[in-house]
Image (cartoon, rainbow, N blue to C red; front, side):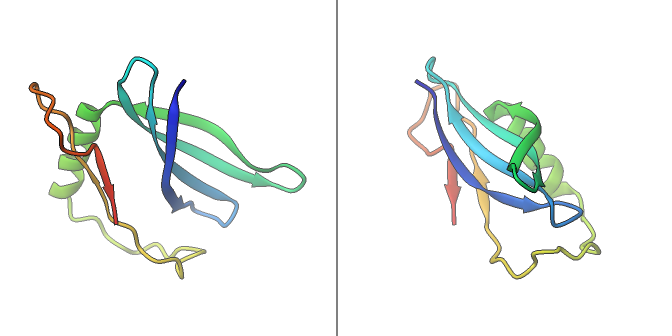
Length: 105
């Protein structure tokens, strides 16, 4: 059985859009970060439009790319009163060390 843990949400360009980040451990034992674009509709609630699955190596590459860039913080969020969350993702080494794949804090 696949196990999943929702890490959190990132505000979208409007109050009815968001990005959900989830860690999924597959039956085979591999772990993926799933980024799901979600929209809100009356009578339905939040629903997923599309998802993107990233394996630990892809997450590491994305993390390195984002650390190099100086991203502007011009956009103000519709829900900016939520506390910030730091997400630390670590890929497994060839030796499969015992460090966690993710730390949320």
